[in-house]
Image (tube, rainbow, N blue to C red; front, side):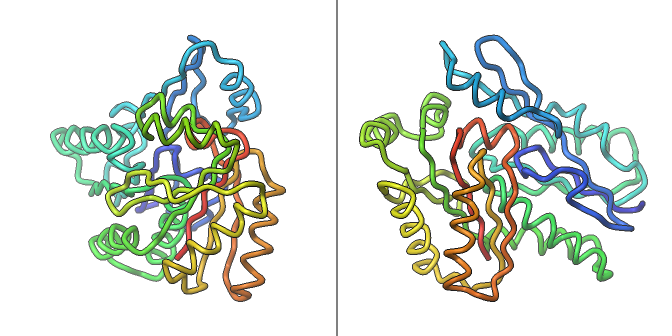
Length: 279
């Protein structure tokens, strides 16, 4: 194949999720360390075990982004490569991918490499990757596909609902006071992704019905057009399906996809969490 899309594992996609005759797809994994035990976020990671370890941990867990060598190993030497990373403001993955691009070019390879900072994570990245594959299959030129993919992240919105905030707080992704208050209230915390790729808390909700109501309100406030929705869930399929059904009551023609979060997003969203991207 002449085209390859590579993402870090924050996209929640697996290789089987992207089926194309002309575009190859693969991911490079984050590593997650909990109480000295490292779990690599490969496609076969047992997320149930991950959540068990998170909940039993005696010390804060941590994550490590893919090394430049991992990105390098996936690049087509003579093809068109597009690399997607989690938000630069949440991880060093973007810098790692750019280092791989630089090394690749210094070795004199003829392949093209573009690195796109998604400014988000999870289902938003998955949605953009799927759109990019569609554009490539339609015959779009490389430079135009890269430009459109980068611009699409300014249009896709993200809202998330979390039951626990511990890993966001201890890893510096959320303010300690905000996380403490949400936890003490025993509520769902509802947040959004900013245009710069940072996490912004929007509000709180008690119970699943309250959470669903706040998410729908957010989507209406930010003028959802009813096109496409992708929901990543952290071992909470029941809530994801309930959200899908509620969304379709309002936007009957929307295309809704449900997927299970992989390890990296699961680590930060924790068991029960939902991440929703919409366009």
